[in-house]
Amino acid sequence: MTLISYPGSDHQVAQFSIDAGHARDIILMLTDAHALVEDLASGHAPAAARQARAVLRDADSGYDLDSLAGALSDVISWLHQARGHALAGIPPLT
Image (cartoon, rainbow, N blue to C red; front, side, top):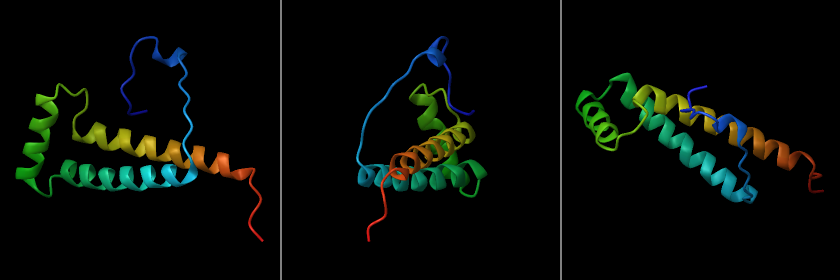
């Protein structure tokens, strides 16, 4: 898992509800953000990657570019699974 874990946080549960349309939009937004961060992490644009690293450092982020890309990928997968589970009980339109 690439998300930052805090002591004791694995014993806590958070739940929130969003409709399928918003879930889809969030997944698409995070997919775009993941593609951008992953490209920066790969070093294809060294000046932009340096600036992105500086932004993360200045924000006191617990993530570097690689771990941020991994965390985004994890969240995208979880949202896909959650959306799939939520829609699984809905019969198809006829």
